[in-house]
Image (cartoon, rainbow over all chains, first blue to last red):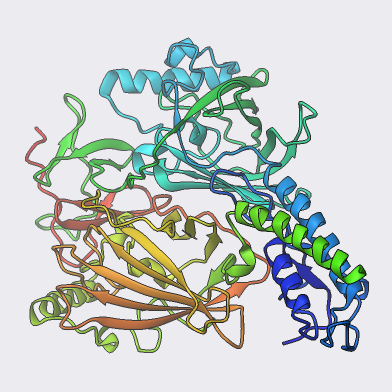
Length: 355
Length: 276
């Protein structure tokens, strides 16, 4: 169906156009647009993603001249159309290849290259020297004491399979997959199946953010080296809910959930299979911004194994206490001398269950 | 003369274009526009076959053994239990139930993989379209392992349909919340044909054929999704605020103040024999 709107010229199609014109077919083929938008899909290379597509106003492409006889007696192609096709093909070829090489290759499976402590350069727990204020240091000390005493982790939402959210998701307990598209960089965090959408479409922060554990992320690509190619994705994440912890020993973030997280994500300058994420946390539980670098290494062969927190999770929390469910299905205590759960809501002999 | 010069120019362009065209791994004009947010149409519930009423009205072609299991599960649900449905403790739907798309999904097409990001339980499908063969074995999962092929059934020069096969599933899985079960052996094979509606590119069809030992025959259902114009994504956390609890084979609930309570009338409390 011939459209009257602009013509989308695709590099892969330009050669076909030229051949068609040489065969003196009338008219110019139309290519469907996507709701009028130009579709430029720069690629993150690797297998490649997209190629440049440019909208060419129809007015710039002369309609084919009426066929007239050439020296050989046959019809002659419209020379102005052919010339434009050639010019378009050359332009598009260079444009498309430029688009494709604009972004770093972040495809594949990324595994953390250090331990699960937030700052991999320091020991876990108190060794992290998290810059907590006095109030939140007290909270943290209480969590450490609970775990030391009874092994309980009522402070840790993850034991109930509540997702870690940001920033803890970037510990990368399980591998991460990154998918770069022009408007969004997706991060699939295999641990707990969390999903980040980093919007790079130039949007502003909305007036209201629906709070989530993973937050809302807006990013933009920058070319720090002036190489003509993006090398760093700068991201800011806001709009949180909680409770959230930094890592499994229970370093807390503030209950006001006003955390702001800033990241600079970039490949190592000398090793294209090493990814750095410089993460800065700004939170009211801290006395100052806290910056660490988390590193991830690309696996040569991606193998994705399903991770499910809820499957075979034998820890339950009842009435604020942690218990285990044994393999045989019976409840058992987590610590020595732990009292059983209160069964007030069950009917006992001579009661209705609510006395 | 000018004509011969022009022919030469065109020939050189063809030479220039061809290798560059080959260098682009993804000619997205070749693919249908599957990208974006897809939702169940208004008025469609959570049942597997949207064209039929829920529960027994689905007429799932179950074998007598699995029909009996289904009936027992429905009775348990009527009494306040969860029946055969495992999702109340945040076990994911898996395939094919994930395609009920309780909450919206996003599809992103890339040359070697089509991703389906399903908001409910943040389930992810990777449909490999890189020409790979089936592995001899693979760690089973609720979403399974999917291999797809793009086809052009109308010979239009453009792909229109994504044909997918999914294997290597684990369980337990049911078709929908009513608990119509799939077989315990998890030998399910799910075949799909995904294509845009010919008259409305904002409608996506998924013709799903399920082959399973709980069924008397292949079970074919057509599911339809509508494209969201201004996508809004909502975090779906099953575990947050989940008042359901499973201890052994019994499902219980937690009261608002966190105490254990029965899910069914007359339900006994858990055995506390390991507490002194």
